Image 1 (cartoon, rainbow, N blue to C red):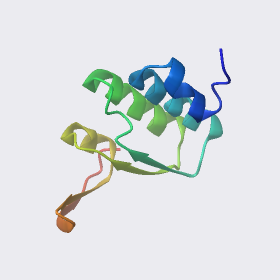
Image 2 (cartoon, helix red, strand yellow):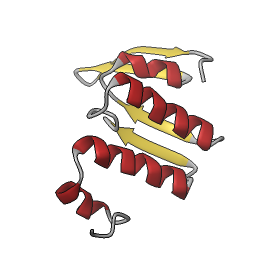
Image 3 (cartoon, one colour):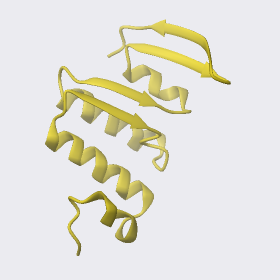
Image 4 (cartoon, one colour):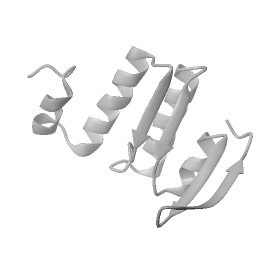
Length: 98
C-alpha cells in the first residue's frame, strides 16, 4: 500500500468517496485555522456528507471554513451563504445554524 499521506497516491487505490473521506481525516489531523473545500463531498450521499461536515465543525472549533458546492443541504452547516450565478452575486444570507 502506498503512503496515503501523499494525496497523489490516493487516486490509484481509493474510490472518489474514499479519497474525500481521507481528505477529511487529514484535515482533522492537521487542524488548520481555515479550510477551503470545493465540492469536497460530491462523491458522498447526503448522510455521509452531513457526518463529514459535522465532524469538521465539531472537531475543529474556531475553524474558518469556505465550502463551495451545488447542494443546498450544506447550508445548515454554515453561518453565511453566498449564491453566485454567471459570475454575479445573486444572494447573500446569514444564519445562526452552526
